[in-house]
Length: 145
Picture 1 (cartoon, helix red, strand yellow):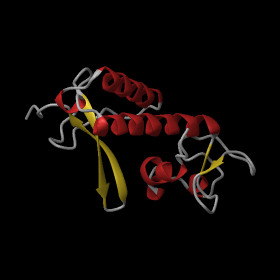
Picture 2 (tube, rainbow, N blue to C red):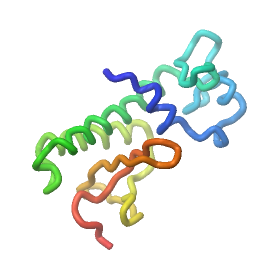
Picture 3 (cartoon, rainbow, N blue to C red):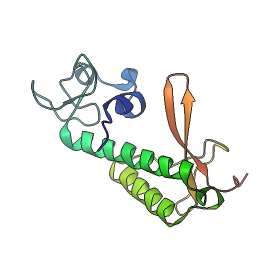
Picture 4 (cartoon, rainbow, N blue to C red):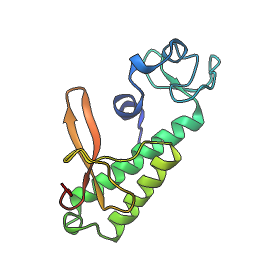
């Protein structure tokens, strides 16, 4: 499995201004209220101040890993731009399942800024934002609006 630590910090860890003091100090997981005694948890920052419990880290890593697998497939597949191939559909479904297990909010299209309804064909859209990579989504075909 890929090392997702840097990508988790850049894309998935909640913004520092949304974390409680205990989370910013590493005493509590950044994603849940679980206390992290010294020596427990997974460091998400070089100074060890941002930490996660193992279950949350595994869940969040799964969301990011499935997104990247789906994205990587889509940029090399000749079929997926016309509508997802069987492998693209499987990778997309794995990612959506991982998002659901992580309690992520509904998807929205970065192109038309509308929610993407369950069952709508969607594709990953990775782009460079001011603070680093932005992991987003687009309608797979034309936006409805």
